[in-house]
Image (cartoon, rainbow, N blue to C red; front, side, top):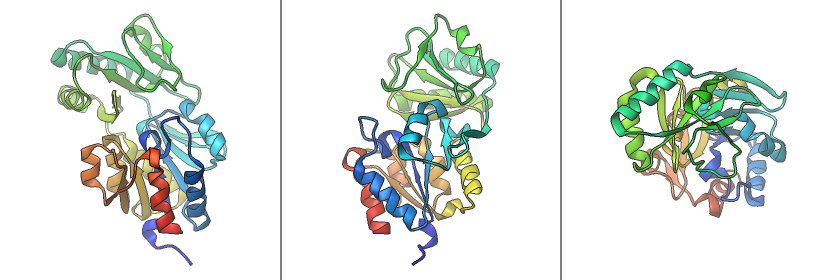
Length: 268
């Protein structure tokens, strides 16, 4: 029996959503994704991680379709192993944006994700990676962050919380970059006008599926642009209040297989 239009695609964030705290996808979630796929609803990954940060996961899931990475700056085809689109952040603008943020809130610590399928994550002195499972290369000064094209900048403040830092950064940066809060300790600057929603739109076009026919899962404000384009929006139990307010329903946490719980109900 064909599924109703709102269930033609399953779009998931990774960290805090599909991935468990140990960076794995549980057997239950794998089975639920397979159940949805067998009903004609493929899985679309929509993540803040850049392509190098998810390549091993794509192989582990035997994932063959497009994946939205780097907060929408990258759309990568896992089947052909080629980049369908990559949007870089002008490095002079990025450096200027950091200066404007520091003029408002004092010194911040920064990191960058480089462009390309093999781009590295570089971190300046003082920056602490919020996710210890992702590799990074430490540089000795901020200027070294701009040695190669970048897709986004990660910003941390020694005292301000994520919401306060994101609000201050938006006010300071204006149209120099898109500011988003992607997770605990993760405020990011991407090219202006680029976010998970723009990447999601391109990936669904590649798949030939109306994004309004997707069920989308997320946990942080960076998932809001994807939510706005989706037909059914599901927030995780411990999601940010902004995302919970925009959701059609709230499921269990990633630790409790919240994605699987919903998929089993929709496709079981």
